[in-house]
Length: 265
Image: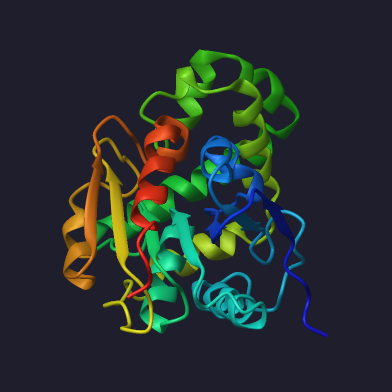
């Protein structure tokens, strides 16, 4: 029996599948959910090994997560549904575009376009973060409530960590620290091949967005994403770090709704 993928659905209208980032869960979409669920039937999943979805044998690799996501889409007849993702989820939805098993696609600060020393930086900075958070696990509540420590812990992900909700930050940090597949995924993502393109004609329109203040996947990587997906529309979040759904949730939601509003090509 294939382990199930946890699913949470809200709203009504055309289907919109949302894919979270590394170490997150469907709850990571909470900042944008009120905006998108007002217009669409929003389907949010926990990737295998994340949240309430059980670990699979290949959940510690990008290829394994991509295969699981494709299988979920096809088994649930969601090939024409629009799909959006951020960070690791952004790369996964671009892979779905390449495989031709999605409608319109929006990728927010997708990973997979690092080169050279950027790979080492990605592995070192995220690996150090997960080790630190596991050491501080009993103190995450207090640390998340302080703007000073929020800023120190989230500088690589947010342009304005001090302005974020302490409750949300605690939830996301705990999820990152407790997700068992995170260390293996960090190594696999850093060592594995870059994300390939372009999108398949069987998929819909592709939109890629990037934060001007992204410190995890620097803005120079955006040009590589555009080269891999030359037909994609592009959007800059001027005041956002790596997680636009934190720094500018309304702008991110509006981009997703606007970019997936046209019919599948």
